[in-house]
Each structure stands twice: as structure tokens, then as C-alpha cells.
Image 1 (tube, rainbow, N blue to C red):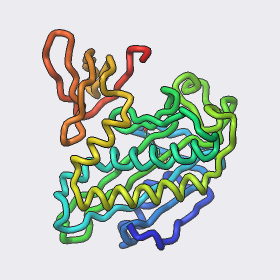
Image 2: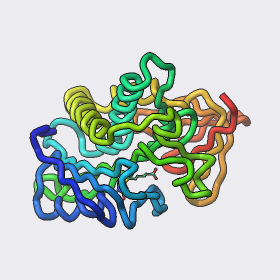
Image 3: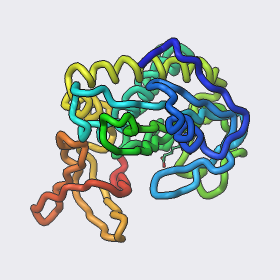
Image 4: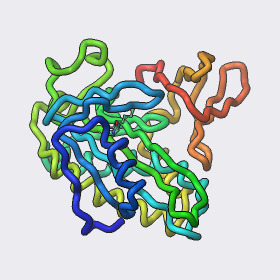
Length: 263
Ligand code: BTN
């Protein structure tokens, strides 16, 4: 990641992921970053809307162009977890600087939610364009949304019980720019680690920061299937292994996970 690349700041945009995709098509380089103050069509996983009110929160996207020959293209499927780790490291640092020594810690929920006090603080959405790697038309857009200074009153009713912000969790306002800088620093560090050491390291750090492993969970798959069991591990591809109560083991590639125990 070239840290000298300027960050492109926008007031309002439909979605920072969509905007950066346009720049990527024009040939913008690896490491290009777009940050917006608000999004009019912020996107979440499974085509959901990402609530993106002005000023309060972080909406950013990072362009990743795979390095030829260093790791397999298929290994890039680990990018959402890689980005989750970068956010966890960065936000934990901001939290401890601001609140002093405190047990308040960000955790990661499978596949790529960022949690604080068991509530959703942020999420990651990776869009990809995969073509012949030599054509230069293969790239990934890593989208990151973090609720920073949003108040409970500003939050839509339907997410009040499940979402949080740094402000709601601590009663303190945070500098968005400091958190963005720290996320970019950690992202470039862990991305370098990934290129040098492969994805196994990413999976293991993700597991150690995860609040999902060891918990009783309900998995809701996109076809409506529900699976109940205990989340036991994440495999080398980042897929979730659930030990079902009847003794079988299920490998979950995509879906929503609900923690059903109180922890
Ligand atoms: C999720 O948890 O469903 C993922 C949310 C990702 C939101 C971010 S905000 C910046 C970037 N642009 C988007 O349209 N989405 C991502």
C-alpha cells in the first residue's frame, strides 16, 4: 500500500465503493482511498442499505490491485477478514488512547462485522472485479463503514437494539480522521503481512479477535436454511465450521450468524 497516495475526500456520494470502482476502471493505482461525509446509497452485504448520515461516521473504500505472483488470487477472498483485523487494531488503539486503560475492546463477528459491547459498530463490504490478472482489470474494492459519533437519537429505530457507535459506547467524541489514518496504517501493515506470509496468519489473528468462535450460534443462509450449533473454527478459506447438536459438522460459506448464547 502506497501511503503517500492522497485520500480523495468527497462531501456526498452514492456509495464510496461504487465511486472507487469508477476510478479503478480509469486506472487509478493500488492504494487509492475514497472517503465521503455521507452516502446517498450506502450498500451493506446482501444488497442491504447502509445507513450513512452526514458527518458522524466513517464511510471509506480502499482499492486493492493484486500483486502478481506473491499469493494466489483465490487467497484474496480473505480480504474482508484482513480489513476487519485492521479496523479492530485501529479502533482498539483509538479507544485505549481516549478512554485510558480500559477493557473496552472491539471484537469481530463472522464473516465481517465489527462489534463493540456485542453490538454492531461497523461492517465491511468487498466488491471485486476478477478478470485475467495480467490485463490489470482485476481488483478489489474494500469498503469500510464505522459508526463513530452517531448518537442513539440519530439511529433508525430498526437498528437501535443491534447497533452502536464509539460515541454511544463511551460517551466521548472521536476524531474521524485519526481513526481513518490508523485504519489505513494498520491495513497497509497487515496487507504486507498477507503478501509475505499468506492467508493462514490472517485467519489465525481473526480467530483470536473473534467473538463468534466457541459460541452457540444460529446461521441463516441465503436460501432461508437455518443451522443451529456451536461455532468451532474458521478454516483456511475463512469459512465457518459449525458443530451441530446432532453431531454433524457444517461448513458455512456465506450467511448471517446470530449469537444465541449470552456469553
Ligand atoms: C455490512 O455490514 O453489511 C457492510 C457495510 C459496509 C458499509 C461501507 S460504508 C463505505 C462503503 N461504501 C458502501 O456503499 N458500503 C461500504
